[in-house]
Image (cartoon, rainbow, N blue to C red; front, top):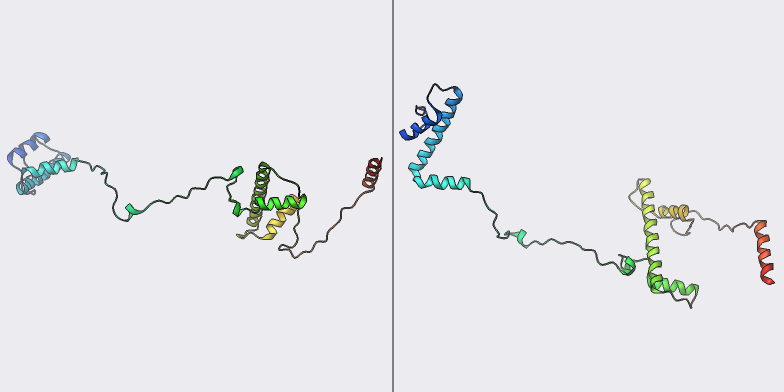
Amino acid sequence: MGCQPGVSPAPPRAAAASTTTLIGLGPHGPKRKQDLDKICELKAKAWQIMNQFGPSALINLSSFSSSKPEPTGTPPQGPMANSTAVVKIPGPPGPGGRLSPEGNQVLTKKKLQDLVREVDPNEQLDEDVEEMLLQIADDFIESVVTAACQLARHRKSNTLEVKDVQLHLERQWNMWIPGFGSEEIRPYKKACTTEAHKQRMALIRKTTKK
């Protein structure tokens, strides 16, 4: 059995014979007939290519279809070859494990030494003590700013205001710093001394005089 007359050009008799051998003799069902038509069409195209370009064209075509492109080791050309990735690496931590440079700190070593001299001009702090005090100051500032930002977020604001910091300092640390963004003037209240405290103080003075 050969191919149907609608396919052109037809394969030679050897191709038709091999097709009959592959499909088998009839009668053929619709599925077999469809397969036979596809095989005949492919063979006709192959025969046409062979007549037009020669037998070597089929060999080159089959090798091209079976080969997979392999990645080459050539670097990419164009603007991407000249572009370099920039990665910011944090600088090494300062002494005592502090990442912030001394120029950006609120409390520096010089300010800390000046503060100590105001209390006692003859006092000298060790370097380890200075680093510890600076670390405590950094932690305190960070905790206050974090809590104040939470208060600003609670009132649905994207701006950190002085009242947020004041509220946290007053409630958490019992600290009130006048003169910063407050319209309220609070008088200074002296702590009231009880009678029992006065008696204890009098007893202490009497004991120290002896």
